[in-house]
Image (cartoon, rainbow, N blue to C red; front, side, top):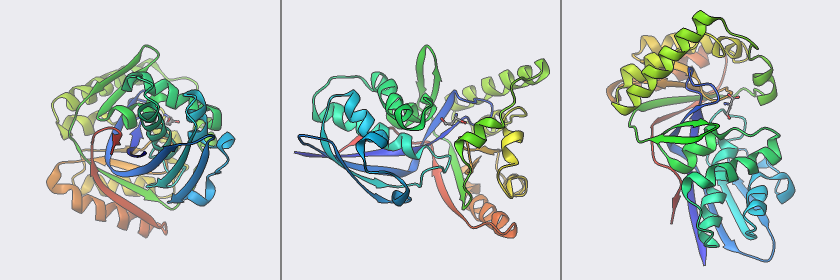
Length: 292
Ligand code: HSE
């Protein structure tokens, strides 16, 4: 039979958790349809699909099918364009891992599927980070370390504003400083701990406060036209914290539910004032990939 999997977009880093923290977003999401076949075929539709190769050897999803020895006809409807900072390729890899595991009865747990999906991503991007695939597969807030993934269900309203700017992940990684001072380390540990506690308490104030980062984010902000203006505008409109989503260029804000709509329109306007087109998602932390 045919299986449909909806795998959410995600936001990695959250400021203080560079290469470690991630959250699943209630929206947008990729929707992937799969059915058993003799060989892997991939069809892409949706946001930015024209930029993604359908050749299984060059597609994240092809690599996941290979890793699970699970050939299938795979149709991917992209909810978010690649290079958005919203875990676009991770969502497809997560959907494929969860769907093929089910289709072929492989019996892997969600946690076990994380490195499989990440490996798929690495084949294509050359670099494996679990911080997007982990939340897309497991949902909620995830802490991905070399020891594995810790998952916490959390409910925090978020605004994700995606400008019409292309930031290559390579550039975004090249500007990351090689060293940080001890006072910055102390600050980062405090913020990461506050953010984690805020997730346990569903406390947008503490989560927003913990998103502050003076090591990686300022260097990357220079690659995003309008970042400082958008950040200031969101904070003025009531955001509890603002940072870069993943490697960018999406800017993400945490907030109280009642401020979300106003923050969304304010961020859009602020990009507009800088001559940058953007789109905005009013969202929140959501669940992981779902099979239908
Ligand atoms: N954490 C990675 C980065 C992106 O910020 O470069 C997502 O894997």
